[in-house]
Image (tube, rainbow, N blue to C red):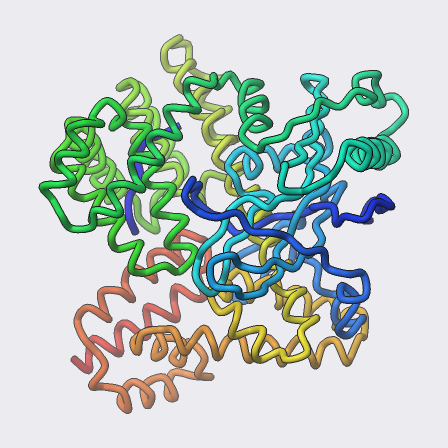
Length: 527
């Protein structure tokens, strides 16, 4: 994978033990050892059924797109998530998060990445941002390596009899859902772990990642935390960097980029700015940073060659040229493939297969095969990311539907209201309409309108104006609205519209691109 980073999931039968078993996704987070663990309190069955039944029955993520966010694929989990009430140890706020009881990589391999990345059975407070792993048991099944493991954190406070009963019930629930030919002897002897790190280390071992590699990653994570705490003290930062320079390599910048993306997704503006500033400083002051900066400049140059009229064949030719350069060229090609996701589709792969069939150059054939594998890998990652996002949105939507005060619940989850949330909500409205569930449609539409209002409140003035311009019925109304808001128009606004137009064109949304082009032309005349 490239080190390039440029700033800009039918429930199983429930065990009869007296604990809530985890089953779902949590908000993306970065691992910080200093963060306190959140303690999960089971949501009662009665609480899970509150709210209107018909509205909730339509609140599953569908494959239907909506709100201009693109298609959201359906995520079918063998053991789907349920909600748990969490009390934040930092500020005392109560909120609902999703947890897993069983993860089966055989049935749902798409969960491997989120689990290994610390995104499952963790909780992040919506109020203060504090969070950490939930103190709940989890069974993980990896049939490829005939592995069945259960982590039972010490904080779960179960005695040996309760633990063995819980493990037996989880094992029975797993085997009850598997075909008879997939039930193997190793499933009767689940390996028990008392710490999350031990389980994750075991699972990473199946991926060829050694304990030493994991320790290095933890040390890099701690270094990032230390540098953040130093803030703008450049001399202190340089001293820390000098002492830890062996940790600062390409993998360090990959981790830093992941942390920046996670913080941005959680809406932590101040911390995001501090991290971006830290990265900028490290790019200028470290050897690994200088190499990466030069590589990123080449990436930006490569990306500038992409445009709305770039064909799949032209893209493939460009990818082949980069790939034949070696490792750094592969990194550039990967970044470009990510940026050109709209045209790295089935026709692109067909064209690649055709070129592969017609070339006799062994070096070119090897490069084309590698490009094909990387394209498929990136597309699968993109799909899994969309599925995870839809699953996370589903947990938020369930919380809103069950809340006695919908407005308050939406406000509490304002950070989760985005294009994906609106897309999933729109698909639920469509499903309710197909089911002739009039009350559900009315309620979901009301939530949709309130969510849009909250989203617009957080937009800068120019984005609010653009939303209004895209909503008017005709060109005349658009020109009138532009005239009324002439004071808000600027060259920067017009330039931003150009970028938006190119984005919609590259995504194949010609109608919206044309609308933005018209707005841009009229706005330019009024400057």
